[in-house]
Image (cartoon, rainbow, N blue to C red; front, side):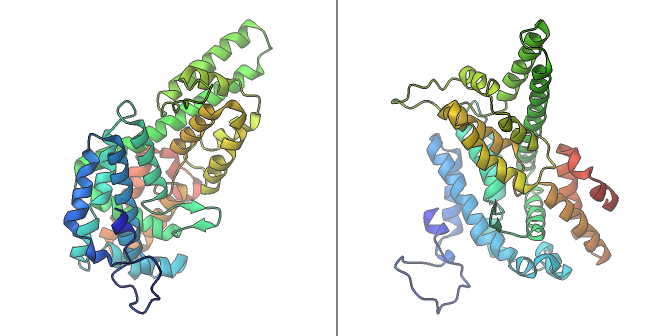
Length: 357
């Protein structure tokens, strides 16, 4: 994977200045070698599984996504619709490129088969791959791909998944997991807020607090377990302790930040803020609690593959494709909308999205 990821694109200019690190073209890495790496995703060794799927996802973005979307990305938000139609058309596909890389999203989503009970680290890594690697990530400095490029990239990935039902099923499983977690988090935050409104020390307050704690425990069933405490640490990393520390936290801002990612319509900036602020706000609760909260926020927040911005863009692109006379391309974008709204109905419920649909 390191060999393939460090490779240069085959169409890189031959006149580039040679760096100290020896480079090689991606053509030097065979399809058979990549398939062999794909086979290691089923390894009995957890680290090998995680490294294999992470390496493949990085290769997919660097050598497939960026190449396929080069002209779309170059065109920005005013890209000519013909450039988009060209990417989705089967007539102009580079068969060698497709055979070598296009199967990787299938392998990524099939890895969802490994549950939290079996391999929580891999499940958390799959969320990270889907959110921040397959179509790049969104940082404070800006996104690696434009909204239009990400929408076309989503359509490309769903095209690939259509050819393998099992991968499509596991994709829906992963995003349903996120949707259930968001609803569970919102339910807990609502219950906790109601408990805080009760008179301190009253029977009503005690009952409401117990109800909120029960909802937090249900939410935790959808999250990765707390990290094991190190040998030199006196902190107990068990789930009950972590939940109790979070529930009794005095910093109200922790729960305000969590509420911003408890619905699927939040913006990429809300996700960035949550992932940046929560570790700082929860640091005083101990390493295990802080790590668990960050892991939970990462699973809950919408990443770069499916979010309100990408679905709004898919809706607009479906209209443009239809007006250009390409109903097949329009259907690809509408499928993105259908998949996303079947799991996150609110993504199609904004006024603008609903009117455009």
